[in-house]
Length: 109
Image 1 (cartoon, rainbow, N blue to C red):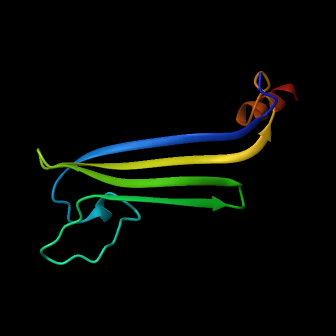
Image 2: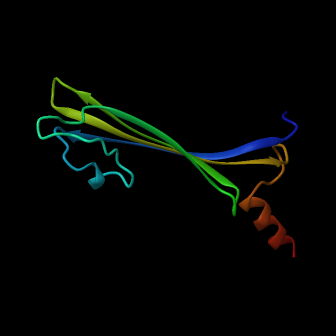
Image 3: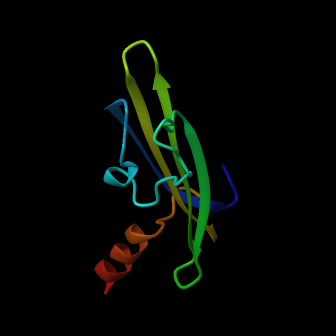
C-alpha cells in the first residue's frame, strides 16, 4: 500500500477525423498553429505541446494538439490531449480524498 498520493489527475483525449484540406484550424482549436503559408502550400502535419499552471488553485495542465494525415483516403486525425493535474501530498488509499472527504465532513456534522 502506498504511503501517500502525490499526484491527482484527469486526462481527456479527443480524436476527430477530418477531411483534407483543412483551411481553418481555428474552427476546431482555440490555439491553432499559425505558420506562414503561401497559396501553394498547406499544413500537412503538426505537433504542439504546452504546459499551463494556475497558482491560485494549484492546478496544472499539459495540452497536446496534433494532426496526422492519411494520404490514402484524404482524411486527417486531429488529436486534443489534455492532462489536468495537481501535485499534492494526500492520504493513502482507504481514506477519503477531495470531494469525498468534504462530503464526509459535512455528513458528520
